[in-house]
Image 1 (cartoon, each protein chain N blue to C red):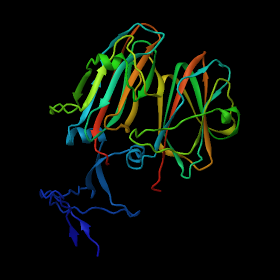
Image 2: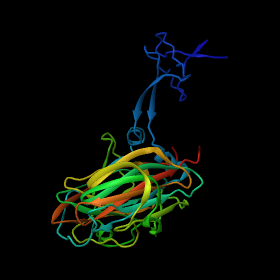
Image 3: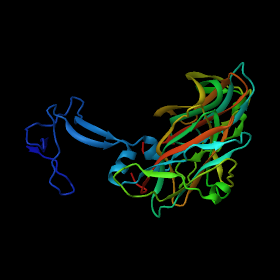
Image 4: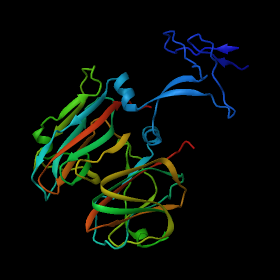
Length: 190
Length: 186
């Protein structure tokens, strides 16, 4: 038995199947960040603001994040450093100590869905010149040029419950640096 | 016989077919890298960290990856970084060179909840490291960080390899992150 698909608006249109035997559809494409923001209100921005750094010979801790959700993974969508001189960055997974963590200066975290009062189940700290980060694994290194470079991860890099990471920066001259993240929380499912 | 498509949540909505006879849908677009990372825990990064280069007149091989896994390796994204203007080349199927005996490079599962590992031969390059043979796939220039998104369309079969080379305009550190996944469903 074969069926036709009718227009639910009652206008009599019937869905087309092409000569390649494909059902023709017209789709509005949503990103996962958008879907989570609309449906679950669990998509967030976090930013350190501009952190003045005078130390140019070693790395200073700039941002620390811990996923404090009881059940959900934290998915990183976008890493967006900004700075007024060329700056070297390191992404450290699983840091355990240092003044970036012990000083516990809260960064600004905002729900991407402006209609939602929900906060992020995460500790997000911002650093200061000379802040240290100890422990963990240096997962990646990169440079960001004047003005900043965006690194799009599209949620593929995910942090489990109680997982932590940090960004540390070493500018090539005295500078203001900023780290902004876009991230969301999701269950272990697609 | 024709049918309507009903809302499974029981709210009585019926799917629209428009005047172009297309069924209207709304889709959340997931990358293959995301899906494989979440469902199969088989998406990985190969990060070089900062590699100091002083050779400016010729290319140094920075990253070599030979797919010794049982599945095809999909190249998802290449992130390249340098503190001075740097030219890069991506070669496929190199046949030799000193890069193949470079330091073993550890892969990082980008699903940080996963302890799953993958068996590929990744090598970290060094100043003056060579790669011979191969076919040039692409050339790029960076100052700061640039991303090349291939979305898995580049497929490296078992026992085939790729190599990444860099030629900076002055002595510098460079870094490269290769994001790969193994599509175990196909």
